[in-house]
Image 1 (tube, rainbow, N blue to C red):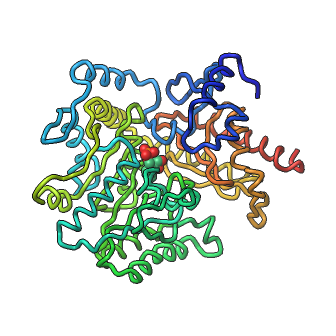
Image 2: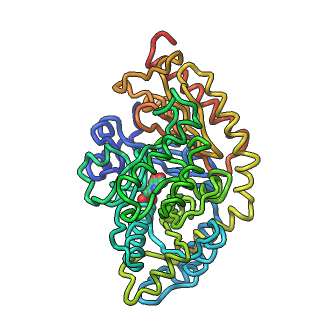
Image 3: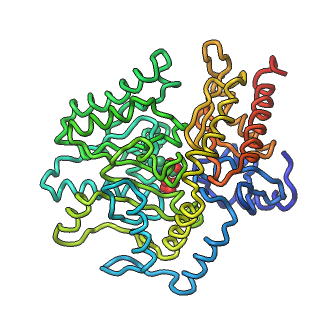
Length: 459
Ligand SMILES: Cc1ncc(COP(=O)(O)O)c(C=O)c1O
């Protein structure tokens, strides 16, 4: 694709000076990077003025949509009064305390105390540190092993990478935090198609029980999981999975940490994925939708049992970030939550736009390239296959997911490939029915274009 002179100039600067997160720099430096300039509602525009429907809410985060003047005003007002003060050494600010109270109202019962971070990754590392401190404070310091899941994602900081189950990330020398084990993910299409979903859900859950028995419950700090794996490919667990995990955690007295960085703030038609699956986590992490991405902020919610134990322990709670509870980020997050409440966005996803989106998305299953179309609320994925007869995959070197993303971009739609074969979408909670139709129509056209590029038989 040729670039305008303005874009070519920016791409040149970018090539010389910027390392991008999760980017193949060789490919990007050849092809040129995308520069997004402005946004409104569910649409974004690049520097050349080309318009895209943002089927990814930025990076699963702009839940209330772009162009919200209320959030700009909340930031401006807080910045004029007090742009920053910290929460160290017994200080804090009113937006920080008020957001903490608001979060205790909307998170599942039993979670009422919060520790603020700047991102989901920091929330993960914070959760690990606080859980380890909790076990030390209760006289069980041998409880140090965290159990995560294969293909789980919990962030990019050094402990979060290890806890996540992305082997290509582990391969980049990042397993510095040693006391981590992984169990099977509930990925029916990829790992259990020869079984019924229910039987496979039980099998995946029981890999946790086997691991607990192998290690010994007395050495386990916590089981750590996303209610629904997002970055792993919108892996919808079979209905038997979470009830069995709950049974196992209760039987063996294992703490449950729910990573709600993607599932939280209405995306599944409930405030949190834990509500959707009726989980009562001991610890819950969040980021992204807490501020709809307008400012960076994350948080860790703790059960009273854990928080009170930490608070009663003599001396400093020696953990924190300069910007933990940043007043401007907290003011924007609180206003964002108020918008979600006032506009009934959670209910809208549960009973209106979520079912409409899922019904439209499901129609893609008849496309020759689509082996499965799945999702919940405003989270969805398709699995790309070369043949639907036996669900054979394309040769990974053809990169079908990337090819579909390129075709979608050319058609004015942003979706995201995951691995070689999965393509996902997570649009803003404010998307209208017409815009859902536009998204699915553009994706179907992009599937046709992909089929022609990958397989001349379809031409
Ligand atoms: C479930 C989950 N946890 C943690 C993270 C890390 O969050 P951040 O990128 O804000 O560090 C992500 C990011 O996508 C995520 O999806």
